[in-house]
Image (tube, rainbow, N blue to C red):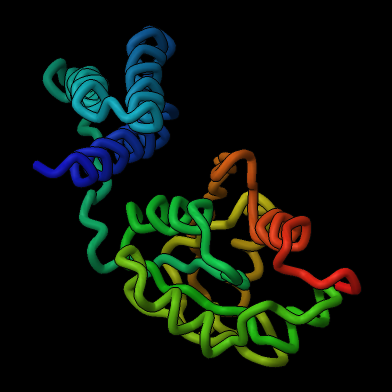
Length: 236
């Protein structure tokens, strides 16, 4: 199995175990707390190994956790409720400017694709200029074209020019993935979406922001490096 698919499977497996643990924690007595704690540690270890790239070990750790939870069934304590691990039809919402695509963008989209079909909403030019005080380097149609070509993206669309929350009503996502710099509280965002769509999504934040190409961290750094070189005139 391709390594990327192994990692995706391991992460879904571990998250499914953690979700099952949440469902059983209040249904069993204190005498089973050590068992549940051990299962939770194995599941968290699995997520650690996924991030470290050791996805075979991650699968093993997740299976140990699953076995501990299933022991409740075989001892007659209760029947665990396992979430579906099928993600193919889940709508995953990601939004941003996506100007000058770099490795950080790719990692965000790769991470998001683990939860289902990634639908990317591209910020409109006038909204970017309003929020950031300057126009994006690439116009909205170009950014849409570039992001649509990335393998992790199922579909890309332009956002609403007036109401940036409107695409949430269009797509009614199952999952929302926030970038590390997006200033939204996950629970409050889930509340807003539920109020506007009647459907409450899961909201995750992609925390990893790793340097690339000698310490660059994002689009602003790329532009700064260009202008520090011979590409910009002295009056830019």
